[in-house]
Image (cartoon, rainbow, N blue to C red; front, side, top):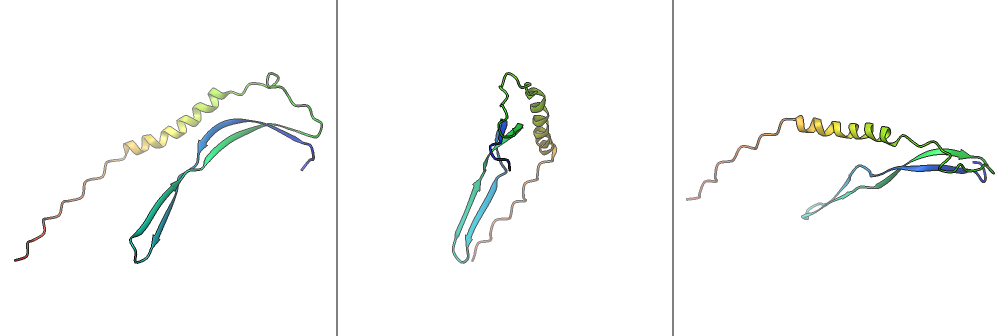
Amino acid sequence: MIAGAQVVGEVVEQTRGAKVITFKKKPRNTYRRKLGHRQSLTVIKITEILAKGGATAKKSDRAPAPKAEAAAPAKKAKAAPKAKAEAAPAKKAAAKKAPAKKAK
């Protein structure tokens, strides 16, 4: 670590992580609880690391980031799994059971 150093970055994306499912069950009781949680995440891009006493660059001095080019491939990658899921064949419905016989 360098004392007095500065890190300059920018927020790229604010998203949510994968879903975590928690299942609680107690034996011999009808106690079942299903909980889900998604953590909020922030993706950042480090643009500069300045040593002690280094001058910070103004926003206008820095080269603009190609946001349109970076965002387009990410969206295409996310759209591909959805297309796979739609192409999968639908499951058949379970066969119906015969009605229970009446006791005589």
